[in-house]
Image 1 (spheres, rainbow, N blue to C red):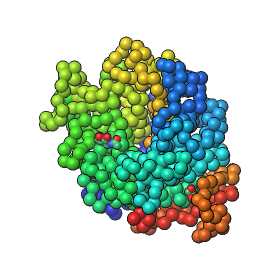
Image 2 (cartoon, rainbow, N blue to C red):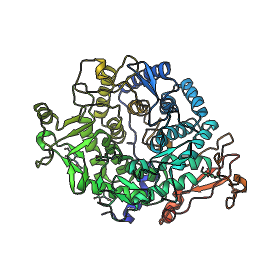
Image 3 (cartoon, rainbow, N blue to C red):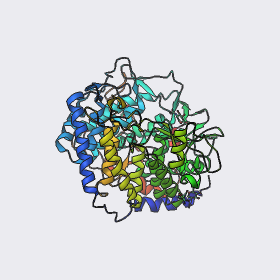
Image 4 (cartoon, helix red, strand yellow):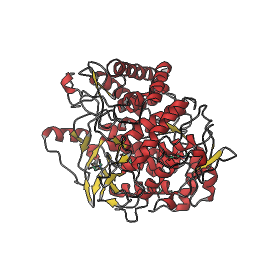
Length: 576
Ligand SMILES: *[C@@H]1O[C@H](CO)[C@@H](O)[C@H](O)[C@H]1NC(C)=O
Ligand SMILES: *[C@@H]1O[C@H](CO)[C@@H](O)[C@H](O)[C@H]1NC(C)=O
Ligand SMILES: *[C@@H]1O[C@H](CO)[C@@H](O)[C@H](O)[C@H]1NC(C)=O
Ligand SMILES: *[C@@H]1O[C@H](CO)[C@@H](O)[C@H](O)[C@H]1NC(C)=O
């Protein structure tokens, strides 16, 4: 790592106070209002079709005009949850209220998909993330929603098996409340993308246990004593925290651990310097090891690749395209123009991959660098594509993934460059034209086919189409001060969570410890937990920087009826 800790802290403190991800005075072009209205009406069609054909189930089947319950999302109505805060942000008040009512009453004590375990990662980011987001967006008043979120988290917490180490397992049997320990290692995205959600839950309920567990896992991944490169962790990690293998990547399965490092830094105002330092080191190593650029003749596109040991793969998946926006966000927070510019360059390389016959990008692409490294195109069509656009597709499918659009929104909000507005308006038109099913909107098998045949469409609409694609498109055209990137932190399913300060007390009584182990006392008699007479708790403690303590001591009024937890101590000390 080349960064002096002192320098980072100085610039971090200034940047966080300034909160300057968005360009000050950013104003929308006149075309934005009609594009925002078009996103809303398209989303409303998609959601209404879900309601008609799949209400209460996970996903719409737009060709069969039916529904399916997904293996990863367990039949609790994933689309309602993932659409919920999008409904709020777009102003669909009645539909939002209906979704909140539904979400508040789902019984999370068992999975509806028989024999299927519950995915710790997918359940955290989709269900827990959306409930906390909707609760915060709607002014901290839907007490039953928060209570149900806490019931779910009290099941998810069984993902951790403290006797085996600080890293959560990837799946949990909700019938027995046991993690599936047969997979010895988990990937870092699955294990390391929960601090935003669990911290927020601790903040809102006054129970610090959630934050403590989540931080322990994150600390263990970030504290790898001999990473392949500083800050970059192998994609697999054992429950003990020991790394498994030497594959490094910002692609699927590896991605959102890095995403959450810098977002957690932002959410907790640098309460523990580990997050920001590790992220900056990961970016620095990635600039040296993973960024690859094509020749001037093919437009000097900069891609973020993956590596296995010292061998680089000259390929990028669209999932990794989130890195453009994440580097813009982190570069802004750390006040580092180099990182911002690389983030913009990655974003531009990714938006460029939407140069296809449908105007929608594929799931993966490859290239040859200016100095001749990489995977040469193997067909004449690939060769032509590469010569025209500086990439060729290795995967022609569009899986409703939002990452390229996501990064374009960060680029727009940070720079005000109208090219991102123009690009997104074109993508919106393409989605309306090419992904429309008999009902709803869906995936494309082949982004190079323009024949509008249903056999080019997928028959399963992932809930993240509603959470992410439509929301990011809307945020592109929406007033930047409405859902500002300076005050909201988006989880990896695009559910915005508030920065720490000034949380009003919820109005209802919350559940606490609904699944007590035999012999556990009630909350009021638990040893060592005393009600705080001030009704305030401090969340997050600075590890080393005294100046950060002030910034990090987030004061949260205690919700009525809940005993406040004790403040979380040094997470590094509990991570062993
Ligand atoms: C906090 O939540 C944990 C996890 O569900 C639970 O075991 C514990 O009893 C709760 N503490 C209090 C004080 O409610
Ligand atoms: C992590 O990224 C690598 C390289 O792109 C990929 O091969 C691997 O499948 C990813 N891991 C998971 C768990 O998806
Ligand atoms: C900004 O980030 C780059 C890339 O990691 C690094 O080389 C440089 O030292 C950083 N600048 C500052 C002022 O920290
Ligand atoms: C970004 O791309 C532009 C245009 O190709 C290039 O001039 C610039 O050097 C690149 N910046 C970085 C930080 O790579």
